[in-house]
Image (cartoon, rainbow over all chains, first blue to last red; front, top):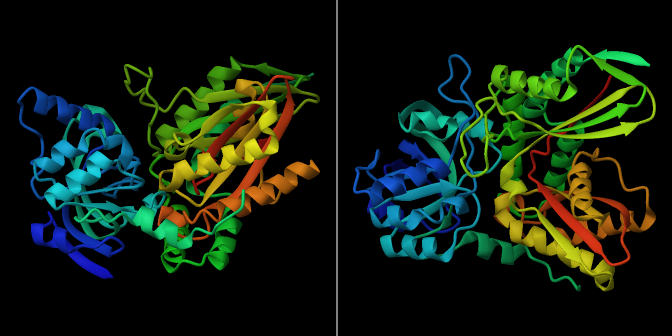
Length: 186
Length: 280
């Protein structure tokens, strides 16, 4: 089903999304990948404030290529989400509304998604040029020294994603693959 | 003896890094068109459509095809009649990579140390594989390698008794585990034989093979076909969201090995399988 959704994402919208829905996101999202997550974890451990409030916000696992003159951003597709599995449950428990990435999540993350009524979206991996066209504005707001891994605030319009894991724990990576798998004799 | 200035090598490597990251080679474009015909899942076809549109935008607007513009892997086949002048060849390759990534608006994804993890700021050093060959030419292959798929690659030290069935199982298990993480449809590079490092290098090199080529060895050709069929029965599909096009190609290289071993390496590449060749 095709849906258009405003981000940050409301609790209601997150709960209404179903695994397999094709969704266009419009509004504000934040980027963070390995190094930024590590720093956020260290900030939480030491009782410091996070550079972004996770509550209802959407984190996009992405580190762009540099922008050419006159453009807000370079190529901007998703990175592999499982590398953030170690950090995601804590942010979800702090109210993180959704994550955008690509690839599998572990059971701890799936449990935290269900526990918090959150959602995991996939953007199409390797479509960074196409996806960059849906990003209207990009500002580094924290950890600038991390370069491509800094935290960026993005304004997006009709950013295309697919619901992989919904708030009930349904997982498109498992269900869709079963549908197309053909039995082969070894 | 033929003299070649290393500056010429730098210039070519720079251009090749930029070209590879914005324009997919014709064999890969062809693979996309064929995949769209073959894909049975509607969502799978939609994703393949997006990926083709992505290639178009990348070339027209000079935006890298993928934000992961890779670690630069460079194969240099150097004719033994060649004499490099004007500097050190390894420095020259890295200078080409540096210029390509800095001037070409490519992402700098290399950290100086695997544990300390401070970015080198210019995507150097490259991973360079030299080979000495006959003649007075230099054959350069530049293959920027993304790590979504690199991370899903595997080496298996099988026993001779495992035989070809063991090899098939190893390839299938690597692809199955990779699933959506490796950005399918993938190209699967396989090295069989040699030693631990030789099979890994063959698997990497197999990814740079032109899409229209097959193995010159009859049983390997059959194995490539059979594995492609079996992989495309796994159901993983484009983006891992279900479908019949999980892999474009399976490319296999082999080498003599020890009586006690059967090393197998599976190097997976995403659909952005960048490889460019030039001969100087």
